[in-house]
Length: 292
Image 1 (tube, one colour):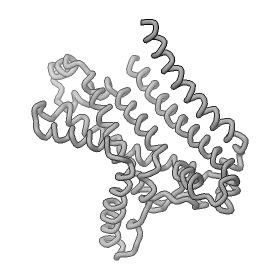
Image 2 (cartoon, one colour; image 1 turned 60 degrees about the vertical axis):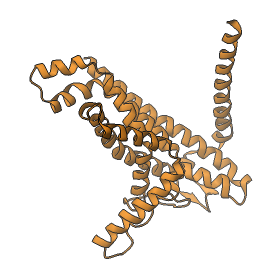
Image 3 (cartoon, helix red, strand yellow; image 1 turned 180 degrees about the vertical axis):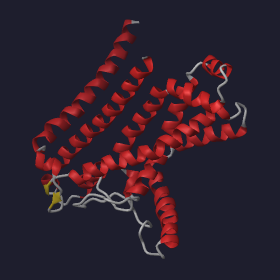
Image 4 (spheres, helix red, strand yellow; image 1 turned 90 degrees about the vertical axis):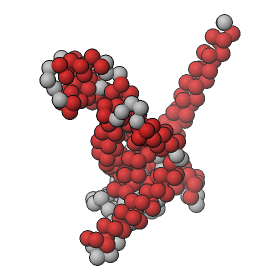
């Protein structure tokens, strides 16, 4: 028994030590280049000088657009699965199989899907109908990258939301019905308010994954060097994860770009933590308001 206790404790210690080593290495090698100029200016000379503000802006814009796209669809899907679909329905089984399959698909496949469906099919179709065939939306853009990331994170949101809905006792629903509430009123007045923390947890997990994924946006909108901010939905954009990937694998002189590389990794790490922290604060405030 003591030996097993020692093994489990050792395993936990190793995991925590690895996390501290990785984070400490990033902070040690990346903090030296963090300046206001680096955080607020556009890149210069092929990213060997200047800053990474367009990449920071692009990352935040991508996550915000992705969240706006995935949360409503994911929540409505979970409501259907838990509140409307018959428990023994074959359609329900097919939807669950589809969700599990989507969760297991490699992210690079989502990128290829986004390129084929969103960019070439939807985007080109919009151009043919509204712009006389001129290439406006039929090219990689931030809107298509956001929708691709929404597809990637959709299973996480649906599963987390459905688990939150299932945690609400049936007695809550029965009381709402006994007071004359319709099903829609019961869902929006009783079920969703009492499961809002679980729904927001799904959003937090989606933000965490969306901020760090690179493969899906490589084909659908991200660019390595754009010294300006995206102002329209059909603009390409810089993104921190993709920027790190290109500097680490395609730079002709790794030693020159290494300080910038580690600083960019540190910025992405802090930005991801900040986005998660903001979402956690919103969830905590909503929980507190529910208790009043």
